[in-house]
Every structure is written in C-alpha cells, then in structure tokens.
Length: 527
Image (tube, rainbow, N blue to C red; front, side):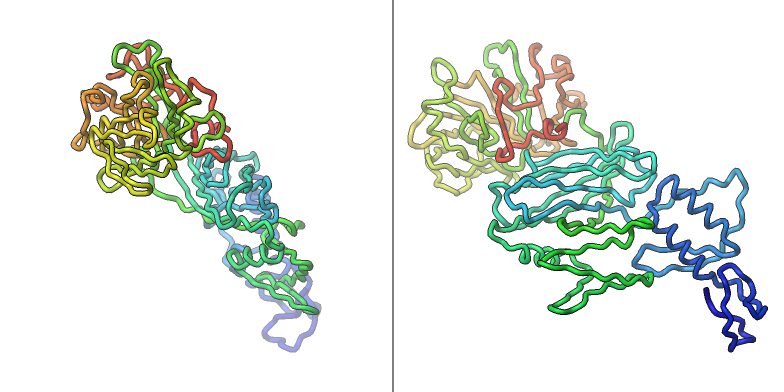
C-alpha cells in the first residue's frame, strides 16, 4: 500500500490499496505511476528463467496490467518504465523471443581444495541467441584435461534453455600454479561451422600444503566484483539493487555465494565450491570454413602391399612442435615414436633403449624449420653433434642420426622442406617400414617454396586444415578430406592398396593416459 498522492491534498494521510483509483477520502490518484504491487510483480516475472513457457506466462501477466508495463533490466540495473504497447492482432501475437545482452558460460563445481584429485566442472550455457543451431559443440583445450582436449555437445531443451555439460580432469602430478582452459563453442549448419564463440579462463592448482584460507583468498582476489569484509564480531551485509537486504555470514574460511538472479522463490547458494561467469566472444569465420569429416592431429597411411621403394606406413603429424623419442607402448613421452630396425626387423628393446624418451624437437623457425637436441644420449647432424639445447636449421638432404654414442640406431634424412612442414625418410634398415610427414596445423601448402628430393617428390601433397588432413591434386588443385572412408586409390599419388588410419601407429596398441604428449584428437573428440 501507499499513501494518497493527490497533489491537491498534500496533507492527506489515507492509504490507497493496490489497484484502487481513489483513497479512503475519495481523492483521485494518478494512474501514470505504477503501484508497488505492479513493480514487484513485474520484477518477479523478469527474474524467472527465460524459456518457452515462462515467457508466455510473463507476457500474459504484463498484458493484464492496466495502462503501464514495467521492464526490468538485469539485476545490476534499476527497472525502467515505458507505456504498454497497443494490443496486437491475433496473427501478430507471436512476439520474438527474449534476447539476453551477452552469451556467457557459467562455470561451477570447481573445488581447489581437491589438489591432486579428480574434479568435475559444470558448464552451463546462458544468454545464447535463439537463432543458433539447437545443438552446439563445446571444445576445451588445456594441460589439465586428459589427452589435452575434449569435446562435448550443448543440447537445447524443450523449455528453451541449454542442458549443462560436465568435464572431468585431474591435477595429479601437476605443478601448482595457474592453468589456462581454452573454450570454443561452434554452431553447425549443414555440416559447416556457421558461428564460433571463444573464451579463456584460468584455474588455480594450489600447493598440496596450502590452507583453505589461502586458497579462497587467491580466488577472491581474481574473481571478485563485490567485496564484503567482516572481521571479528562484525556483520557482513549485502544490499541488492532491488532493495533486498541479505545477511551474509562466512565462518571458518568458508565462501558464501548468493545468486540474486535466481528464479522466483529460489536462492542459489553454494558454500563448498566456486562458481563464476565467463563471457563468450563471437569471432568471425572465413567464408570458406568447412568442418572436416574426420578431425585428427595424427594419422597414418597404411600400404597393405608396398612395392619397391615404398613404405608400409606413412605417418602424419600436425603439431606446432613435434617431439621425437623412444618407442613405448604405455605412456610414451614423444609424438614420433622411433625404434631400432635391424636385419631381422623392428626391435623395440635392445638398442631402442639407448634412445631418450624426449630425444629431439622439430619446430617452425622463421621461414623454415629447426631441430633441437634435448636428449641425454646426443644427436648427430651430418656427423656433427650440435650441442644440447642448440637449435639448428634443417636443410634438404640433412642426415639426422640418433644417438651420438652408438651409431646406426635410427638414421633419418630430410627429403622435403615445404612451406607447411617437412618430410623425413629413414635411411637405415627401417627405410621400407615408415616415413614421416611433420606438418603445421591449419597451414596451406605453397608450391613456390617446395623443395624435395626424388624420394619425396613421388609422395602425395598433404596438408592440415579445419582440424584434419587433406589431399590436394597437383594437377587440378582439388582438395579432398582424408578419412577412413575415403577411397585413396582414386586420388593422385596413392597406390591401390593404401588406406587411411586415424592413429599414427595402427599396428600397435599404444596406451596414452593423461601424461602422454600426443593428443589424438579423433579419439578425444569422441570420448
């Protein structure tokens, strides 16, 4: 209720009931200003979750208000008033859905006290436009996530909101500090990426001996937008923008979280976990962006019947830095796994054990590529040891010998230097077994800088784009995505008995857990 507001009777103390046009003294009341009942009703309706049923109910309730309509902004802004629109005809009764100001991810469930243990992040998509596809793809990349990255799907429910997804990870054997998690949200139309949103947030992995107070103080110093401090015998109170006074109490280094934007009749409070919002930023996509049918960062071309001079396996890698190391079946440290080949074939023991788990790194350097020795056994480049941690530019025909103490374990030759990668052939007893494509991810080939020996010039032109491997016909310029279902015998440069395998070592069952170096994107995305 409110007091009489007639300007001709400023001293009237009669009360006016909600909805009445006169007070108890029969003084007319102004109808342009909404009553407190109207304001509270509109505020409760605006707080409810925007969905198909709630939106229709709110509009029906607003249409019942007499003469005015109250539009409530998000909780940080006060409500504004504007006249109600005229009644629309029945054909135009369907109004466009409510569009929030900005899409964001609500991340909750993270508890930094569980250092070294398994944790689960709950990610809820909020504020996304209704014009996007009913199913969105969520991709996460981080050192904390097993295999380096993972993919999930956001699905729209019948209410109009999005079903949350859960991501598991473990900080076991991880150094304490901050770890980035890169997020990509894709909207697909006819198999192509039509819209893309990105964000990056940081997760703190504390020390094992960190106290709960230290953990919470670090989190509050990076995520707070309102600070409430209460010392001994003090009172902590939060006053909302809509006139609500909340008494917040936190004892024993606990965190009290109150969500003022919760639906009517429900207050979302959390005391043991940490939650925050990350803004999703939409980025432009190239006009010719197409989704690869079989995304992967490592694969293999297997030749079932190799002829003279051909290799049985052509191993493909698309990495910014490619690590060469010892062959291991369980949790190898390297991406390119090398083993010794003798006259009797492959020997994963014996001299193979004289290779380091992390022996050498090949990376992009300027307009070319370089190799760096990071091993304990050394490496010879054209018969000369370059020194440990001293990068050397790769040259066409360069001889790479692993290791420096015992000769003949693994001998590689640089047979092609491309604008988007290098090709290595073995020139030891494993020459008929394998060769390697080390490509840059998302890089296009450039024939102008193509340098190759006759041994590599007969190989097909391959590159990596849109998350997967492609073949380019040098005569027609046509690009074909490589997948297990692709008929390779119809492409130029391929023999009749070749097939595409989604793993770099399909002949072996390599077990890679969260400590492995290579991220097999195909198996990770389908996990």
